[in-house]
Amino acid sequence: MKTVSVSAPGKIILTGEHAVVYGYPGIWATTDKRLLVSIKRTNQKLKIISNHTSIDFAKYSVMKIGKLIGKNVSSLEIKIKSTIPVGSGMGSSAALAVALTGALIKLNDLPWELKRINKIAFEIEKQQHGTPSGGDNTVVTYGGFLKYQKQKNSIPKFDKISSHKKIKNLLIINSGKPQETTGEMVAKVATLYKNNQAQTNKIFSKIGDIAQKLYHHLNMNSKIKTQKLIKENHKLLNKLQVVSPKAQKIIKKIEHIGGVAKISGAGGFLDSSGILLAFHNKPKLLTHLAEFENLNTIPVVLGVQGVRVE
Ligand code: PMV
Image 1: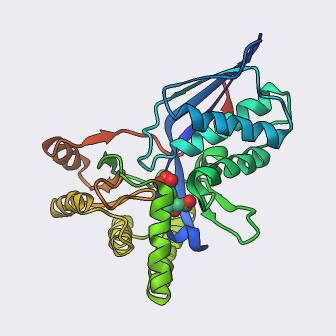
Image 2: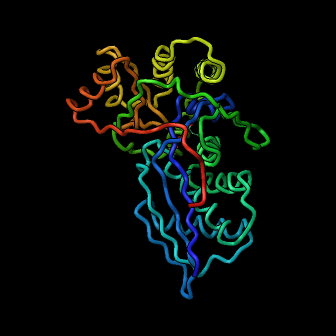
């Protein structure tokens, strides 16, 4: 029996999280942490082995994808292996949705169409997160750096950014896994929005401006101070109450030594806020701070290839 293997990368959000749910642009990048799905046909009932996710959710996803592609998925052995941290803003659920979709498409000899893979993965993401923007699954599918903007007609609008060498001096620091899920954090911001639309919209719009500036910087070489934008972005995310006191404290310490940092992804308020993107012109100072504070750092290469057959 042939085994089909498909992998998909994790991701970070450079800027635009939360505002993107309301139609503003955001900047996404893939990372070299990957998730691998291997599938073979068997004579027994569906079996899933995973070091990554709840087996129940993987099972639900397999059934749903089977329905969407019109294929029987009942006698398969599926292995899921991942190096992407779970539930911390690094795109582990999107990588699963995309790699699983790709693997089932390949196993059934259907055409390898990224547009279709992305569309199906988005359906899985909706089950997991409620009202996702679609940015995670899109960057994980297409790879590289993207400016992503959600559209009313749910056809994703994105621009690939070709030049990305200008993201310098970045260190990812893990503030810890949030207690809340992405869906809960999106709902928390929705309540804030409902209670004060004008004020919250202003925050979203400012975040959207930051994404636009970063896009021009990355794509067209416009001269901007990236670190100033990240600092501003953090302040705005703080106003949305998606940065926990614990993460705020870490970010203050980073700012104190001359760096800047922000959450990346949905964040978290009750305890930890997931990963932080930290920048410093002398990155060694960040490494020392993380060591001193006993915080994990996650080395990544940005802008790698999206979903692929292995
Ligand atoms: O925490 P993550 O990696 O799932 O990112 C969520 C980003 C949000 O903007 C908060 C939601 C979304 O769907 O874009």
